Length: 142
Image (cartoon, rainbow, N blue to C red; front, side):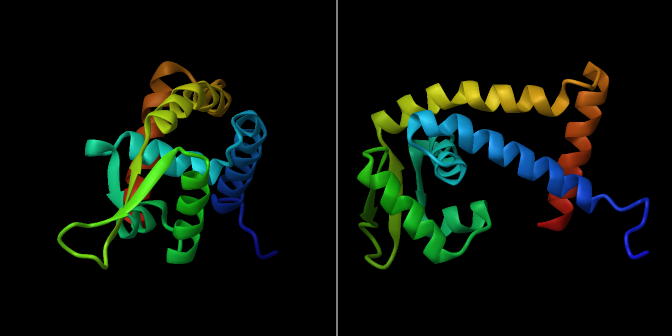
């Protein structure tokens, strides 16, 4: 038997797939995918609502082509605008628009539902410990 009883990966995959499926289903009403919403939400929380495409690529852990494609689709929907850096024309920036902020506010309810599904079997103390352990793991593998 190749899988061990102590393996965590299968559980993480199952949780991820379930949350991603639920997010995509609920975000469909906003004409967004979870990948698009993640990028928007990241911009909404950025200082000045702006990141370079290279920063987004690193933060989202996706390729340059994927980042550019998501940015293009969000720009077509009017949720972000992209522009070249005034000091370096090779650098492209993405900035969230008022429409993007509005859709993030609506989408926050979808995040809250997913978060509740994730931790509803845990006590308040277990939720805090769980979050701290996830953060510790995420910091370690990045």
